[in-house]
Length: 167
Image 1 (cartoon, helix red, strand yellow):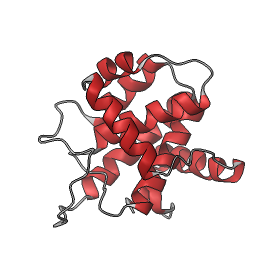
Image 2 (image 1 turned 90 degrees about the vertical axis):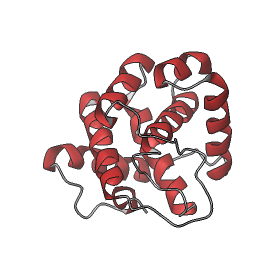
Image 3 (image 1 turned 135 degrees about the horizontal axis):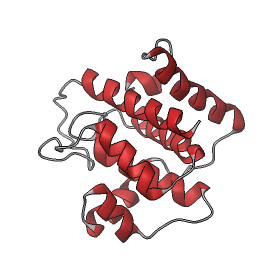
């Protein structure tokens, strides 16, 4: 199951990133980098999850948190310039909230390829943007778990909620 949700998350992020269109918003996302990273989102997600040793539940929560963020703040989109930092931050937040044990931000910054200062900043921004609302009801959890599994099984998200549409 863990491998399936990992594949589902990577597939969803890649799909959302590919569908992103440049916005003319004057507001720049704090998760945006200047150039797309040299690692694919699939390889990046696999690296993050393998080295962080997070549970499958954290993967599901990270998708819930990402969806909450982009629903509340339409000026933030999953794109080639944001997807790596967004998934890193959402995974770190999910691990700290859900798992009993976790590593330091220094470790996660090294795994994610960002500085410790930048990861701390991204985490603060992320938490503020979701209003520190990290609790997920069982029904919502099951919905997003099913979205991840469907992304793997069908190769497409289809009629999934906003998370799959990038909105």
